[in-house]
Length: 351
Image 1 (cartoon, rainbow, N blue to C red):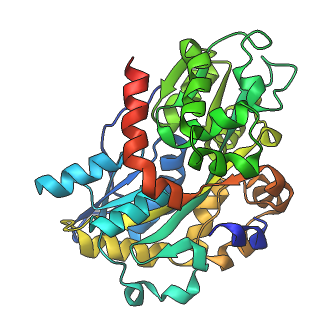
Image 2: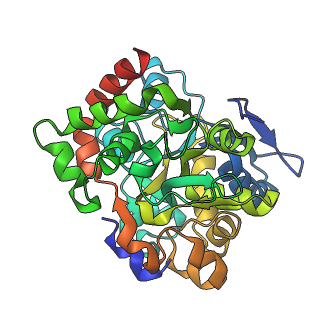
């Protein structure tokens, strides 16, 4: 699904809700949930605030760690507090199958054909094309890590490691650390004993792991020195390094996970009409480009890339020179296994 991406070359946060408006509101609100930290900052400054000013719709923002369970609980309880959420690829497909999301009215947002095919689905429009890579502070680590095996090597690189508190990403990283080639990771996870192999590798590192659940959190852990390395959202890391003049680096050649997030509208969202208004606004290429200018991730609109500088496009995980190190998320695998492996991971982490 993601192979066509290459054509385009392209303080710890809490769960507090933030509302903002630059005008007196007359047309209600929309509650939008993203990934927190500098990701939310980029959307807020580049897209949410201008949308609020133009549409007279109040934007209320929240953040989460991608938990499908939080979306399910709102739908099942009938207490829906989010209108729109950015979800990862597997959660998009699972939620669409389960009827957790509204189908996208593409006619109301300018037509499906304006977007890159891999970036849209019956239930979603891509919010960003993103990656998780191995991040470190180059002012602290003078000999850069070159593999996930280095990430696991606590003798060569003493200190704590940050890791995202999810099965997805963590199992893939464990297998790469155990010597599995990038192009064999999902084949290994599907094979007998593959999942157990990943957990066995995680057992080695478990005493050194500090778990994180948001973009702001992993950046705080890395910037404060509490961890010496961490899997990190690459766009947030690059943006934070630029803004704070920190020497944070991504070890791209270690291998990184490449994915697509999608905006979805929750089924029965109380402010559905305003969510559709937001998608129609976001569908403009010049609007989508404002996110990428602040966060070097891709967007669903091909024309937005023409509006970006060479520097921004080079920093994107979808840049052609990085293709050899990219592990594209195998969403069919996670659609089939997400619930079981999430339960297994949570039980393992709690021990």
